[in-house]
Amino acid sequence: MTSPLLRYCPDLYNYLRRETRPVMVGKVQIGGGAPVVVQSMLTSDTRDADACVKEALGLAEAGCQIVRVTAQTRVIAENLQHIRDGIRAAGCDVPLVADIHFKPDAAMEAVKWVEKVRVNPGNYADKKKFAVKEYTDEEYAAEVADMEEQFVPLVKECVRLNRAMRIGTNHGSLSDRIMNRHGDTPLGMVESALEFARIARNHGYHNFLFSMKASNPKVMIEAYRLLVAHLNKLGADWNYPIHLGVTEAGDGEDGRIKSAIGIGSLLADGIGDTVRVSLTEDAIFEIPVAQQLVKPYNDGVPAQFEHIVNAPPVSYNPFDFVRRESQVLAVNNVKVGGHETVPVFTSRKKWDAVAHKIDKLGDYRPEIVIEDSGAIEIDPRDDETINSINAGPDAKLVTIKDGLQLPVIAAYRLLAARLQPRHPILLKDTLQSAGSNDFTENLLVAATNIGSLLCDGIGDAVIVNGEDAPGQSLRISYNILQAAGVRIFKTDYVACPSCGRTLFNLQTTTQKIRAATGHLKGVRIAVMGCIVNGPGEMADADFGYVGGAPDKINLYVGKTAVEFNIPEEEAVERLIDLIKEHNRWFDAPVAA
Image 1 (cartoon, rainbow, N blue to C red):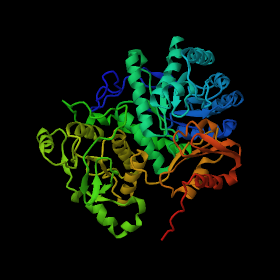
Image 2: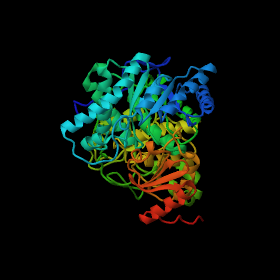
Image 3: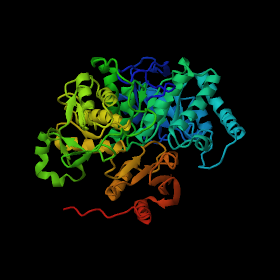
Image 4: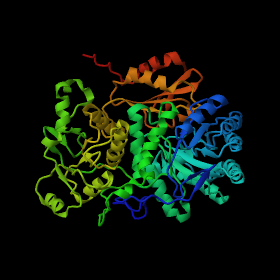
């Protein structure tokens, strides 16, 4: 069902890393066959050079290969010289990236001192006032020309100083011009980035890469696929590297799962040359997560799997989410398939281990025991079994049998392509008998494999086998369903990682808001440290808590600011009042 004109991956069943040109960031190569690079961002205030140097050295020691730092204004960007000098004086050559949003003059200062500059096309020399208007072709072209006039000087400086650049589009921070022509869509994100890329190429500049970040993994995955497909259409010399990231992923297990779904699924398809995991935690904790996500590909693990041959086209459109249309079955009195809620399976062993406390498991209860479900376990390459199931009069619950040396994602893609749509599919996180002894690794593997398939509309039930601990395996299952947007069973938080722009302590504030609102199932709350990650980046959040000034908070309903400059000590209570005013509040149940 993939359009012959849009292909982001040459083979959706067998791993092949996308070939790109190399981009040099100082001494670090991104793309061009180099291992996938891990990077992070400083949370320290850019005006505090000593704090930034100390944090950057700690990140580099932990394995961070590129360090990003915000530069909000030209004056702040001047301090990048002292940060760079301090890092180099300590004998560390980790490259620095300046994060630029609204100020072209800040970029022109920053490029003097750092190896790479990141610009966001949605708010770099462009209009972002959420204005609604119909653009004529002449008006549209005039705005592009104005943007080009302000962007070209930076391009020329990058050429002169041999600097790299990331053209980094974010969902929700697209310019009014793009929004009014393309909407707040993955296509709009791609078009926004390509405008800047064309200008760079027109001036002979090619040392750049792209990113397409969003807090919603489905949007993020689609945007990156669409970008690569458009680059492929433009020609072989548009083979620029890709920076992967899920923006505002949040913290804890939720942040790691959301990041793994977005980043992991694209890496599995050969896309991605550098990654940043954005957690609302100290930046040092991002590094091991990113390292675990890229390790299989840098170690050549995909080559260990058997090759899938003679496979039919995939059964889904990679650029448009539609849930696979299966027939509803009653499995142990639980509905499976169709548009029913995706249930969580477990093994008999794990069920027995928690049976005495099922009433205390709350939202993380097992729903079906796989051994009692009648699920048929098959090899998706087995013609005889596939034909027998398809020829039968009744729909069957089908899954992949354990022990096959196939990548999980590819195996289930093949199953969905060969099995008639009426048969529901049970997703597994691994086809091996056991996972790792490392809980985080099991979590990331499960989120990558199950989450990727759910975001493609494949899967009517899930089971996590790789994590032995019964309670933890259930929690992973439910949190993957939430992060993939297929089963909302708790409050959803969109929280940006700290950086030098942040106007309050994001970690403690996020936890405070969680404690007060964590029982509001189905409500989406964004916690943003500044206006850069404010109304636009919140995308589809119901309510927003945004730093407006030091110690002052602005509150949003959707993308509309409704209260300004609330003292920080009063802001959480005022947020609760706002939720109540919009009839989304209910009191938390009293604990037994």
